[in-house]
Length: 218
Image (cartoon, rainbow, N blue to C red):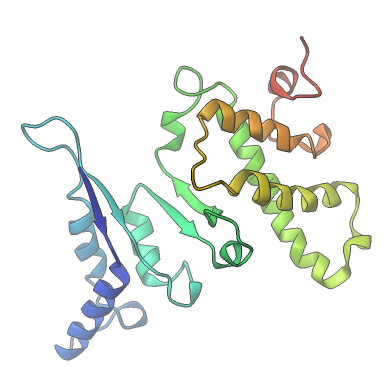
């Protein structure tokens, strides 16, 4: 069973207005102090259905006021849910679909559901390396805006280029595109060929030898 809460931001704003009308003592940014408990009671209804096979999966959807992920609504929701998918206004403006910002997005169940015997043995290492390289590339964009690309060294230039390639080739997907886990991991290794292997510090040499398109040992 799938349950979708269409906009929890409106719900939380209503709680704040009701709390103000009742002259209750406000919590963070004027929201009721019991808002966390209220949200938890709703979200934690997910689980097994007694006497039936299957489970309940909930997708609470919310907007972040001012694009602030530390705002009480997304912040408290993030403490309760098992993961979060953050949609990026910047990526949307670039025409990248789906515009998912992978850096603040997370899954608390990921580590228990990937790896040898579940997906592929290199999954966790490749995921960590992609995350690290993309984070460094995005950080360098801000530096380039100040000092220019000429001030960057070889490593930084490669990471900067990788961030653009990652958004264009990995994040961007056609509306009808469906990638398997194997295809996604192979694509990840292909993108990592744009970075010198000496800078791929999150990857064990054994994975580079086995899966890197230009470094694999037959």
